[in-house]
Amino acid sequence: MPEATPSSAGLTLYRKHRPQAFDDLVGQPAVVTGLQAAVKNSRVAHAYLFAGPRGTGKTSAARILAKCLNCQRGGPRPDPCGECDACRSIAEGTAFDVIEIDAASNRGINEIRELRERVKFAPAQFRTKVYIVDEVHMLTAEAFNALLKTLEEPPPNVVFVLATTEAHKVPPTILSRVQRYEFRRMQPADILERLEAVAKDERIPAQREALQRLAFLADGAMRDALVLLEQARGFAGKGAIDDAVLDAAFGAPVYDVVEQMADAVGESDARAVLASVAEAVDRGTDPAWLAKELLRWFRLALLAQVSPQVLALEVPPETAARISAKAATLARSRLLATLRSLSEAIAQRYSAQPRIDLELALLRVVMPADELSLQAISDRLRALEERTAPRDGSPPPVSPAPSAKRPVVTSGPARKSKERSASTDAQAAIAQAEVPAPEAAEMLNVSKLRALWPHVISAVKERSKPCYGHLEHATIVDASAQTVTLGVPSKFNRDLLAEPAMSSVISAAIGEVAGASVGVQCVVVAGAQTQTSVAGVDAGAFALAESVLGADLF
Image 1 (cartoon, rainbow, N blue to C red):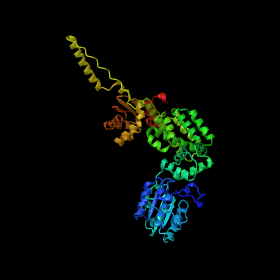
Image 2: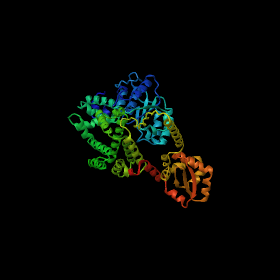
Image 3: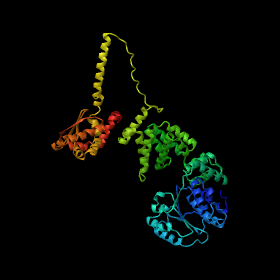
Image 4: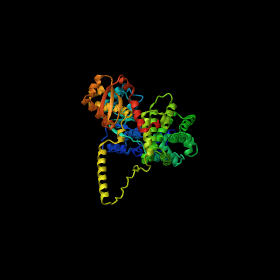
């Protein structure tokens, strides 16, 4: 931990406590091991790419690497002394041979051409000249192309370190010329340990629970955690940092509204949902931010049901326990539907009415009967399945088979009569098994076939393109368990579809989709093509849903 000096007294915490050696770089063991081994074995590459989320130590690691290469006490060495002129000037940002470039504001080809000219000169003070290009993904395509040759074959004693939070925007031609190191999001435990050390060093009174809460609020970024700690210190004044201070500093009371809205969604209470949104907006909460917080809460609730171990890594223990208790009362289908609806609302980044989008997204979940879409019907069907399934995860109960009656021993003519009767019953059962059951005969009707008709058309198309071309003009006239009657607009279509090859294709397609073996006949019906255009895919889909769910659910 660096000691406070007069020059650093006025610095913010994240600048004052920036890692000065690889031992201080928290949460990146793979990066530290790889870079230290490269320096120790004199295998330092000419170019590196440090990629990862914000606040995870990319620029700090680049400065530490520059110290390792230029340390004047036995360097290059994997553990810079931190006391020589090179180490101190690099730490203060005044080293002439360590050049930091912000690619966000120097992204054009002219700036890169100037860099190419400067690279040719030998180091002025130290052993190695190090170029640190921050946010390198912001360079233009022309600038990247101008950098290619220099990056691939730089002059001796020059090392490039490219840092970015969006590695996917870096061209493959650049990626193939650099060694890539991935910086990971830091675990809350690592952030908490550093916060405790900084608070002790700065003599900041703080409760461990409050620091743990800050560690989770930082969302994996050490710099964010130190900024939050400094902000909380300002709110605390001369007192200790506790939950009350954090509530005042970061607006935590709004989270009770988030849980109220989650309860209202779970209870399908539309009035409570709208009242909770109105209460949050009255407090000055941005509806777009509120939608993101709701999305985060329902994601955590889903983790509580599916993976409590992952939930424990993302929120403090008391928060995880509270979310798990509420998630136990929510159906998984409701969680998935809410996550999908909120995600669609948040995706509208430039909406002029974010409050209306949020209210509509929640009402679609709590009032599914008024949302006539295929996805809403699917969600309601899933909810019905969950309600009918056993709570303990056991398979649904099976009706017990009728117990076999104890045979009655008879003799003489009565016994022969019973044997003849049993033989007759067995023959009747065999004959009945060869004939479709009455329930199977009722399975196919006009409404069911119209609902499945788009799938039948697709199955016909896969089997025969000519048959598909004529069947496009057909409409359903009648359907039963034995025969399907189709109406076509002309005698020409009727004669072609009546051919055995064509009718067998249609019959096979209906059998595949509807599970019924039927014959097909065609009749000429005036205006059949117009009727087909009116009965579209959506109408058929709703008819199918009605036949599955029942008309009373709509």
